[in-house]
Image 1 (cartoon, helix red, strand yellow):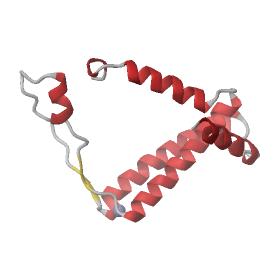
Image 2 (cartoon, rainbow, N blue to C red):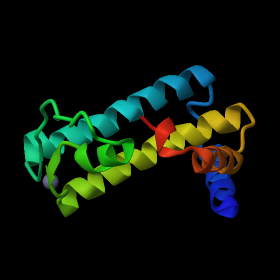
Image 3 (cartoon, protein in one colour):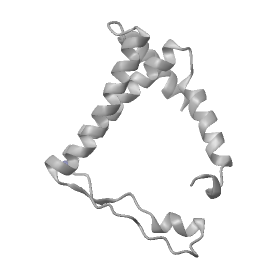
Image 4 (cartoon, rainbow, N blue to C red):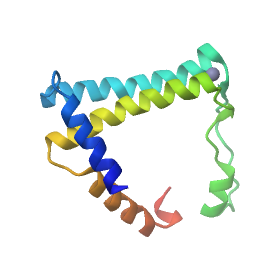
Length: 130
Ligand SMILES: [Zn+2]
């Protein structure tokens, strides 16, 4: 994995010529994030392969935190069609590009970020997750 993230950061570094300023990276990254959200919403409102069904989810008073994992859901119904899947995947890729660009600019290794985050997550219990 370290090799893949290092290679990805190198490729981003080579390709990022026009928007090298941290200001461009931050704002283009924010735009990429919005485009991911927009693509997910369009899978609901334009394509219709997904639906969002959301309401207050009743939680029994005696529910344990482990029960909550089963009781609470994503509010999504349906399944991404191939077209929406490809579009969202591409938008997430663009978002990763700007995350890598920001990491490059600040001399941060994505591999180290992932390792540290994974270590942090693996020490959490379900009690820390709510
Ligand atoms: Zn779709």
